[in-house]
Amino acid sequence: MKIRRIAITTGGGDAPGLNAVIRAVTLSALKRGWECVGIKRGYDGIMYPEKFPDGGLVHLTADSVRGIVHTGGTILGSTNRGNPFSYEFETVDGKIEKRDISDRMVQGFADHEIDALVAIGGDGSMAIACETAKLGIRIVGVPKTIDNDLGGTTSTFGFNTAVDYATDAIGRLHTTAWSHNRVMILEVMGRHAGWIALFSGVAGTADVILIPEIPYDIEKVAAKVLERNEKKKNFTIICVAEGAMPIGGEATYQKTGGVKRLGGVGKYVAEQLRSRLPNEVRTVVLGHLLRGGSPTARDRLLSLRFGAAAVRALAEGQSNVMVALDPPTVRYIPLEECTRKLKTVPLDCDTMLTARDLGTSFGD
Image 1: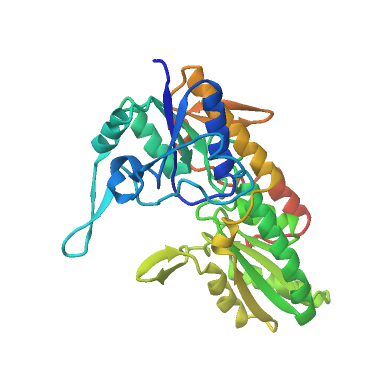
Image 2: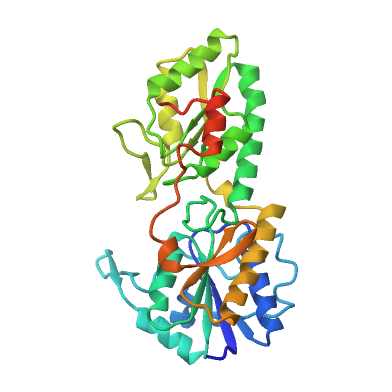
């Protein structure tokens, strides 16, 4: 099928590099004589255009994507609740009801004569893209998650920026921890995979790194701090992923505005350590700071490569695939393959082995 117009959608949490992908897709499409439009806030722009005063689609041109590579966020907006196959509606009694409204999405593509879609997102977005392809929509996915936990690709854009920021934060905490003989706990993102905590923890020379893949023993963590105290190293840096959990326990959740969300493990670990240590214990939570800001040069380049590769895939007749980094090239893999399971930290990977050789504790 000849392509005349393609669309771009961004879904899930924002990540540095999204706008670079949008620019690369737009310019690559225009070069081939294709029109390019952006769908606002996930799929909402094409399913419910009436929600947007100036329409749910953005006509993308070389001018409209100029100067956005270095910016964070997404010019199209995003959403975590726009799954067309399980769309959330609030009932009259205030409850949430989920319905399949994918037919509305398909009709929207037909009404706007969109021939193909580039879907940018994480595991949830790729799963939606896979289901969308089964409805006859020509689609190519672009992997996006700062957690770096999407299967099939060596790396995702946004991850390097998050690691860089977290590493800088650990460096800053070293000086205040040393000055006050404190235990400083830095909580970073990482729901099911500890890539950010591991990479930033090793790069920033944290003394303890707690990740979801290794349930920790708080006594082992305390022992590491006491060992350092005995060696006159009266401060300790602990980097903990938000999804880390104690042996035999569960991940830590907290309520925000009545909604239960993952987080608070840094505070929990601090409370457990205070009764076991003579040191003062403080906690810092980076949270969404890891998602914001300008992407690093590495993430900008990866984003541009992914965006251009997605358009090449469409031009080559590909569909129901995701572009993936397989150094030194970008290849295409089936969407079903990349959504099969999350990419967690292998316990025998080189970075883990390096950390253990350096004396880093994982609480095990």
